[in-house]
Image (cartoon, rainbow, N blue to C red; front, side):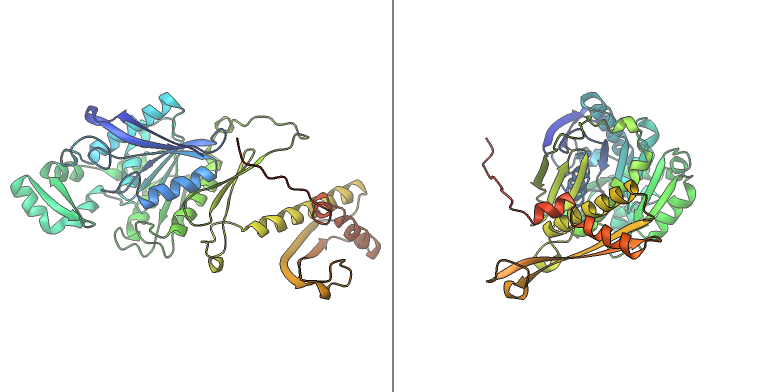
Length: 407
């Protein structure tokens, strides 16, 4: 899954540095990401959220606002209004080279910026804020002890997150004039508000004010235990997964242009490292996108099912599908099938029906629950059919795996 890096013209004619993270195959949608105040496109939260969204089939454009990161311009001459304008420029450029952003995502002050810019980006169907303030002026609380100096001297260098940033009186004037709640009330787009109840930088009251001002459709998701910057990788992955699931309700079917594949044509499974954590993998199967990981106890971050979990899921799904086909064909009163599976290692000598008698063997326990008014004979026949599912036969037969290096 490639990342394209380029520049585009932003507010004031400055060249802004951007990264476009693309999933394998045609994206389901394009998202535009606005980073937090004084952060950048390559901040931990921005990169991790983009990687997880990309694994879910959504392309993400993230860029450095004027005067930050690798973008041109002087941060001292930028303000909230110029950030909003940069977002509109970014959406225009994305529309020119690919497709307009259907999703706007903003983190912290970036969340306030996407709320203000949304009506100027007609392609956007859904807006997501993460730890966003209800009033952009909230950011002045980070340097409240220097405000008088800024007013007197016109521009003062303040320390934010251990780095020096020049803040001008023009920045204070601009941010004081923003009436964000008017933009929220007139948004006319689906809104997802994500906020941690214990956010120490932007209190949860901000999320409440945004939610009350917004009209439906609107949703709120609590980021319990997360910090403001989403410094825990699992929190960033969770945010991305929720966004990917939530936004599908608001995308037009034409947004996801998927090639038609004949049912009998085998589909390749592509697995690639996301590099977001030690073991995390992005899996693409035709139009479907999944995440694989290892449990925390095994050195992973549990961002998705493990390899054996996928094996068990495949067997369980195949079992239920095969039983359903048989029950429908025979008109059996089978209401629902549930399959519970567990993988373990056992001593070969403990398996009476196994040919191997030395060493350890893999064992899969499969418990099948059948709901419906089935008699004993019907239940017995369905259990027999379960053992005939194609995946079951594959796992219990000789398998030939051919491995070669890519050209």
